[in-house]
Image (cartoon, rainbow, N blue to C red; front, top):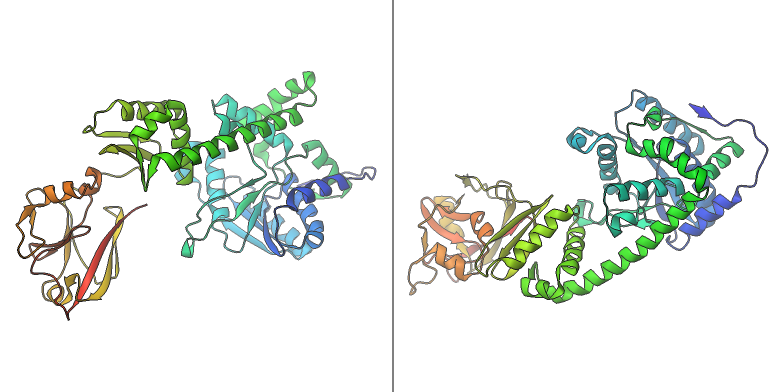
Length: 461
């Protein structure tokens, strides 16, 4: 455990003023701030500062500590955070995470992903406050540039970032991320800690130069600092310029989306009018709105090339990381990457009003309605099951109408091919009785005074 050494008193009110100035315009009365507390120097300083500012700025402060179970000292760090919060009478939430599912991304990225998933699900929080500072910002900008990032990546870390949906009950938004120390240097933070005799823990991995960030911090930036002593502030300023440019690109994408989007799809003709550069910007923005990661530049370029050059009746299917780009009937679709549908499927309905079908990536919704839908009595007699198209299915939707092939009915309904492959067909015994989106087979409808089931299919968003 590291500790402060005796030093002459210094006036470090500037740090508290800087943090307060960053927070004041963003907070509302009695806002719930949750500090991401690692126990390290930076987060301990921010804890001290926030504790002092909670009264003047009228916010409620608590902490969350995430144990990644990577270091052999992780348990000791958790205990240290608990002791500090107990002494200050600050509520602390402790979470253990498993980084194994993300190991392929590298240890640092895996830990970050697991940690941010915890932040997104904290229900008793309006804001998550993190202790990244000016030197972290400079390192992040250099790392992003060395990885070939664009304008958005070069913008590095913003003061505030929305996290989107948190998968919480009622679909509430996740707490926003706040970084109020981005204008403060590591040297200032160290001075503040010693002046206030703070204690903190040292993560032994911070000295391991096999990690990219540590390599920059210990081997590269000291050399840069010899020639450019103020590089931290300069690089942070450059990140700010890129952040402004990124905001303008987002505003342009939002305006382009109004021209090119039709519901959940994009008009290819409108994308062609926008051109390649603006179309790529629009695609990245739309994926960001969906909470998906940005695709590799060459994949996005290839996807748009195929989209622009394909004929009207040609299918396009290009994987973009976690998402995929498809084309149908002159429109483009950005979708979550879909697994192949099962070759054979037969499931019996259990009577639930929301029937989850994870094999197909969605759910059937049953709504009871008098005189409409699939007759409840017929379902009780014969049972109800789901199957997928095998080919050759036929359906008559009206008593005086003709029996037609399901293939033609789905084509006329303009249902994209990948949705047809996953569309659940409803059977009573061996008889096709209903197809969501098309209707109920003639003879199986509820009579005027009979209860019926209205059945809708909701694919995964």
